[in-house]
Length: 337
Image (cartoon, rainbow, N blue to C red):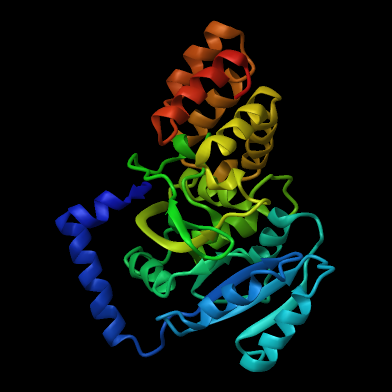
């Protein structure tokens, strides 16, 4: 199995057939698939209620929220309790997070044995989900055999603090793959939905990994272990831009300058070190081709200039945009990859 992009599903006859198969499955299904929404919170009182309301507005009804609060000092916990009283504990479970950062919090939810569902959806605390977000994700996920790790993600609709639309996240047209995941995450965690086979890969790797972000890790491990990844060009989340997440938007001059500074001071290189180290724990589950790519990439990053450039070219790693690939070349020359 390989990672797939939006074009394969929308432009091919087989893709259309799989969508029809799903629609027939939905009619015949006696027990709809259960979706666990994995929500991590920390001092999120300003926008949390709108996110919770967007869950209730979903066209797909069979979901349950598992909220892990990482020690909020504002009214976040009180807001969660208010919604729990309105919805009931069969809709919203609240627990305390490990208080080691958002990535560890999301991994702790993903690996929790008390959470059981058919599909799992990551959720940030400050976004708004489009009404068909879960439905669109399941429409694709249901076309993948249950034993195959599958990860859905999508573009986002960018909004300001007042939910006024200001644009879209970049349009990625290159196929998802492990070679791409080694240097980039194509989908924000706030858009990701995955099946039990993908969850098992993450669970086996554990929740004690030292990682900067859980979403790129999900992309890495699913694509690396022969799973399927699907990037939907239709935005399913209203991604709210504010002071704490401007870099994550991946657009605009300010975000570009911040990312350039991170590159020059070696932050990206440090983060790649973390992901490569984490992948060693899943090494036996990687496909043979992807093990070779990982080894070549890891070795080339620390080589002298010419062997470094040749080795990185041999890995065929790539980013999704022209500007991103220019940055990749610069990072390779500067030994900051």
